Length: 290
Image 1 (cartoon, one colour):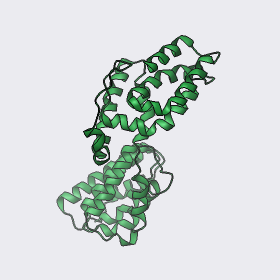
Image 2: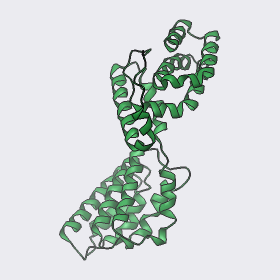
Image 3: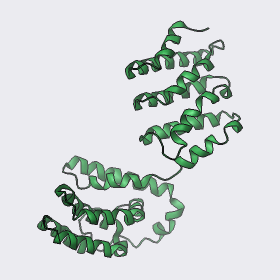
Image 4: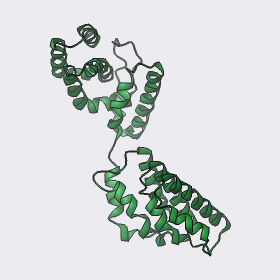
């Protein structure tokens, strides 16, 4: 039986105020959970999917996150998932299946993928959507670990000791996760590791294999950009760049020699730049050359 109060909240899912939309989502979520627990066969769950699927494209990220949860509750509650798929799938396909993924939140993209997996777990016939699922997987399967590197590496030189500590912990965790996911690829490097270098120019703990491999794979992009920043016209950029170079060298270890040309050219150009803080850059130059 249709509940007029619930119908009103479905209309409010399209309200201009994001807080009103969020409150409406919570009301609908409560009703769906109650219907699922009490096995109310006369509760028209399928009627609400068109409204809920629109919430997956809500302009507020926090609402989209809640919408994913509510849609998952709906999938768990309906007797037949095939009824709701025509309305449900277009939104995830639009946000995840195109070349330019809409939405910067990695966590939200992950939860959306888990929502799609919930559909597959229902053993539903997805033949009508044979183009949607592959397009989503093709875009989202790309490894995005390297995109974390600039953020994590810059945290090692942050002015806050707390940020530096959190950066070290995050870097370690990311490295271990990457090592776990790339176990076969990194097997030889783990089994035939030569051990830590004789010295560490910054006196810091040796990064795990996963961290070193991530930096190694991205060094050809990061090092040239950092070396160019050594002679940047903005003082803040020139000051930050030399602090990051030793961090990269610590991760690259002996592989640093592959980038000698960029390093030497960048450092000498930075030293010759009229506005470069010579003392600081010379100190970092010495740390790299130790």
